[in-house]
Image (cartoon, rainbow, N blue to C red):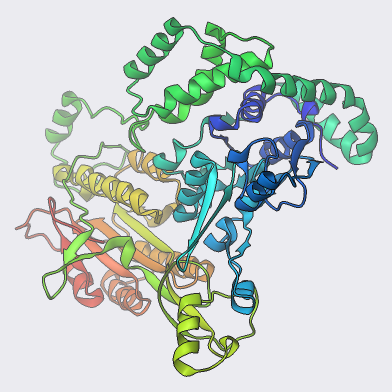
Length: 614
């Protein structure tokens, strides 16, 4: 039993965004971003209940529109030419897209069984076929594989799904209301994907006491008597359904004055919005709002309400531009410390201070050269595992198939036919399965030394600059990142593994300095963190970047030197890739454990303005 859409308390922007897409799916969908337990899924599933029934071609797996040949599959077009179209009505429904979906399950594939046994071209429909003229819902869209998200959004933009396999090309209509939801704490969405969602709504928990009380009352009443609860809102549900039907009928007749268009264009230019999709989607949304209100002309208020839905996720030019850095310490405070005679004592900053990062000019170039002098891609692209019979990743070869055949087996049709001809065997005896390369999970651990010695000669500012660039580079590669900070008596995992990169930057900017240098504790935390990540992620690769001047004076138990040697050997055995960013000057003669770590772990030592490839 579905919770009634009209019974949902609050969240007016989210409900308006969903209704606008129901009136005009060409808006491009809506992304609901908010903490768990804020009713995102409830709203999406409730939407289908108020949408009117649709007429489809009877028996068609693609829900083809019987009144428009442009929205038909090939088979329905042939039926239409012969006048053999039968029409039936169906309720719109929510089609869920699981995070583990494969490309073949998403777009559909060639029906191998029919191709092999009957020698005919046939399509095995995928999720995009089910979603046509329905609601396609992606929960936790920020955790979806990037290549799946790219395919999905391309189809959403074109309104047609094209499947090309082994030289065979098939297509079918795929127009759907795209709805995604995400918890920003679990990772961010790439700007390229974010922009493809027409509307964006930040879902927040209500701070109104009466609203929260009413939410509890309605949920409890629905749980105890769902049928009776739905009857209470039956009239409102019907009224909203009729409102949507009327809005669909007039939305294409709604007009907007050129003065409003110019106003919109000026606002977008002034706010440096670098996508023409913004004005197109805003106008479509404003027209949908007017249509829902029964009007055929867009007003200034309609445009303002539309911009509240279409612009928030398009205002940021760069992923981390929203970060506001604190001001540098004043010159008076700098002179005060310089004249205090404490500049050479690494504990002189026992009172906590924070410092801004500086630009260190690291070049994260993903292209290097192999022994033959040819360019090769490194970075995240080299982290691949070979899988057989697993329909994820890109194919590189094929091998004989020795398992039981089923529809989901990753069979290479062309290689199978070739093997059958060459060996003179039957098709069933010559099945070949694809060998693919898949990306393995990757974690970058930043170990930041924020002890008192790092304040001397602005080393902490250099260290934060290095860490900041590593985080931004990890964003591009979609790696998980963790932050370990060590100062005082022990190290602390300030941010556990996450893909919410803004959280790392927030923590990084606010890191305090001062106290002693517990380097052994930081190495121990690294080992524990890497083991935990690998237990949760098979074949995971762990990289660590130590940013420090290499000093250490706080043991875990007794001997700093012995503990560093022991822990370094353990890190080497655990196959954690290690980089050391030495914040000292090139000819700094002060004692440091950087050389010891480098020799045992076989880690590279990097200096400012170095060219780095992780």
